[in-house]
Image 1: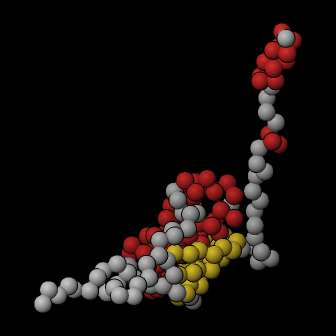
Image 2: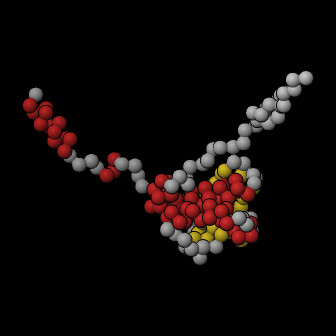
Image 3: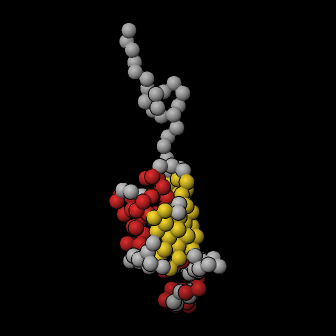
Length: 159
C-alpha cells in the first residue's frame, strides 16, 4: 500500500509532456500569400483576403472611406488590427453582399479577425479574447401573421 502511494505521488509530480497539449495552429495562406476568411453578421456575408502591405482596405473594389462613410463603421473594421497592434501592416481586400452597411461592417470585421488569426496564429488569443472571432448570431426576427411586426399587435379598437 505504501509503495502504491509513493508511486502515485511520483506520478503527480512528473512534468506533463508538451505533446499532450493541443497542437499549435499552422499558418494558412494561398499561393499568392494571402489568408482567406468569411465573415458574417446579420444577413451580410463578407469574403476577406489579408496579405502583408501598407494598410490599404478595399471593399467591393472601392476604398473603405468611400464605401463606409461613417467613421464608426471604419473604426469597427480597424478594431482587429488595433487589438493585435498590427495597424498599417496588412492590406485587406473584401467583397461584401447582403444586409445593410452596419451588418456589412460587422461582417468585414469578423472576416478580418478570422483571416488575421489564420495568417498569424500567434495573434489568435488576443483577437479571440476581444470577441472578434465569434459570429454575432443576432438577426432580425421574422414577422408573424396576425401581427403588425414580429411581436407588435395591431391597434385594439374598443368600438
